[in-house]
Length: 239
Image (tube, rainbow, N blue to C red; front, top):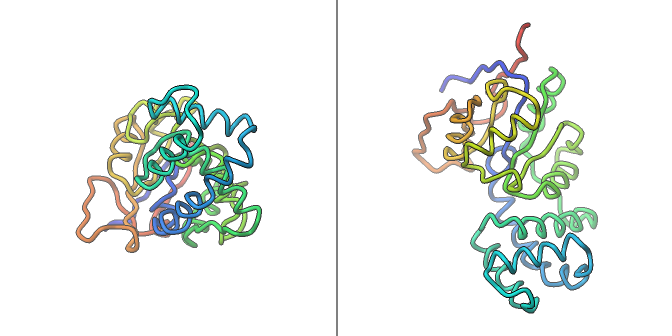
């Protein structure tokens, strides 16, 4: 596998399987949110963000506007256990995790090579962004409370499912427009070929992460591949 050498102005990164192990998300974050969901909603039901998430969840589930919270929570728990990329669920997960980080009950997993790569690229003048199915709040608290230190200041912006689905070409076109760069000036790093296909169709450069802990045996890709951020060289254009 030839290490990718890329010329770009910005790096857009996925989280799960890319900067962070899949196991952390599924074995730590998801169970934590599942365990604390009911109590969090009960304690914060009057907060505008929680109220909106509960309303949006009811509408998404096809329930009536006056549906009781227990029924809405049932749908949220079901979506959580099925890893459904539902925006109201992701909003609540992010809020619950933020509280967990604030209580020092959680510490975000970030691969050491990802932390060093992000710092290296930022020091070289590249702009860094996150695009994950997890809410923007969840992204910020993970990187702000990571095992590799507070990485939040490295990023120039964050994107989640409110921008659009991660496999849709339009999502990547919208991100490029939002950060005022041509798609070709951006490289997207992910462990999911379907997401990378969308980014490439939008004109972005792509790299598939093939981390040993997160990649099924025999996995192949049509994208440039790397086992860690250490194998990826990214530089600004010379002009």
